Each structure stands twice: as C-alpha cells, then as structure tokens.
Amino acid sequence: MRLVNGVLADNLNLRDRAIQFGDGVFRTLKVRAGQLEFWPQQYAKLVQDCARIGITAPSEATLLADIAQLAPFDHSLKIIITRGESARGYALPADIKPNRIVQLAALPAYAERLYLAGAKLVLCATRASWQPALAGIKHLNRLENVLARQEWSDPAVFDGVMLDRDGWVVEGVMSNLFALIDGVWCTPILNESGVSGVYRSILLNDIACDEIPIVECKISLAQLYAAEAVFMCNSLAACVPVQQMGEQSWPLLSGEIAARLGQRATSSLLFIGNQSA
Image 1: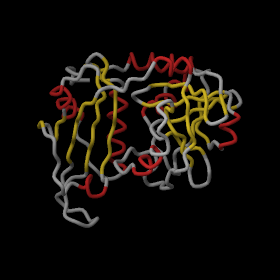
Image 2: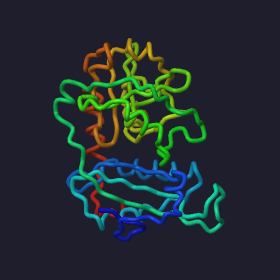
Image 3: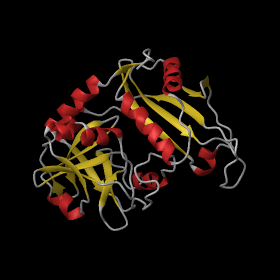
Image 4: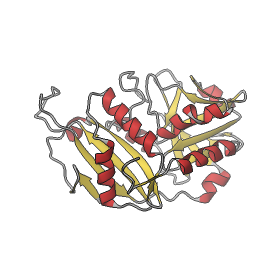
C-alpha cells in the first residue's frame, strides 16, 4: 500500500528523476503498535538529506497526514522524496516540484537467536564509493549496495561489511557498524562515503553523553578483526551483536548499548494520530 503525493497510487511518471537518475532520498523506519519509532530524528535526517542535495523537503505535518491515511500498526514504513520530473539530461527545470512517496511493507522477521547467539557477517569485495558531497546521505542511488548484496545467498548471513577504496571499514550493506576497540565503542567516520543511519546518530549524539564512550574514527580491517566486540544497527533490526565474520569471532558484549537504545526508542515513539508533535 502506498501514497504518491498523498493519493493512493502504484505508479510514478517515467519522467521522474528518481527513475532516470536515482535523484532523491529516502528513510525507512519502524512502526510499533501504531507508533512511529524515532520520528523526530527520522524527519530531521530526511530534511537534512534533502537539503544536502538541494531538494525542498515536505513539511512534517504533510508527511504525518500521509502516514495517518495508511494507518500502519506493525509495519516497515518507507518515505521517498524525489526531485521531481524533467526531460532527458541532468539539468534541472526552474519549476521542478518534488514528489513524495509513502509506502508500507511487512516488518522483517528477525529470529530471537540472532540477538542471543549473534550475527554472521561476510566481507564484501564491492567497495563503498568515495564521494564527500554525498557521504552520509541516504540517497536513492544505491547500486553499490545492490552489487554488494549479491555477494552472498546464505540466509544465515545477516549483513556484509563494506570497505572504502583505501581499505578502511565503512559500514554494512544495510546497517552501520560499531566495534569495541581498546575499551571504546568506535564507528567509522562517514565524511567520504557511507550512509549515516538514525540509530547510529542516536548512539553518537544521545547515548554517548551517558558516560558510554562512543567515537567516530577510521577503523582498519586489522582493527576490526582485533576488536573486543562488534555490533550492527539499523532502524528495523535495532542493535544486532555480531558473532562471526569469516574465521574471526567476537564475544557478545553490546547488551548495555542495546538496552540504552531500547529505552531511547520507547521514549521517542510518536502516535500517528498526533500531528502536533
């Protein structure tokens, strides 16, 4: 079920630049019991990403009205903002208007054993592209992630780890990475490539203030293998402890982080009918 500019629809004009060039941004978030998880942070990141590439984001009230029409209960909710429609060529018409898409999907079924026994990762051969102008943005051109995801078919694998052109650890194919190195939780700095997820930002901006040391830094593959523990996070799976990547294994030590993040999620829920928040 999806809305295009507030109207139930299953199609998009073929002139839309999302189709032509991947020109737009998106957010994926979890709806629990009819409430939006981390909505203030999700909307702020959507606005920020739109601004980075010169798109005017829809108002919060407009998006909440769209979401209320869909009346999700326990769902994955995806918001896509495209730059709009244009003729061929990269140049933008002066009167271009963004299009917005709000759609529902079933929540992925993550087994409890994933959180109890830890996740299995693979190291991807596909590298994350170097582009500081787009670093951190969740834009629609995700072809490198598509290529990386084709590198495994084992359903036991949760995610793949992507490196940049110089061999530094960047992120997972669908999640952000944290590693406990010398007693400090570290996450790759994303000023040249990668996607800065909302869960990652909450850990850095909120939980790091709770006397849990969390820093952004460059992480080499050797440092990752030597880490005391590793976990991945995204908006649908939350915090997933990592048990293994190749021949390397780690103890599951991310419980305190997961508990803190769970508390943040509970305090950040927004009832969909409440459009004044």
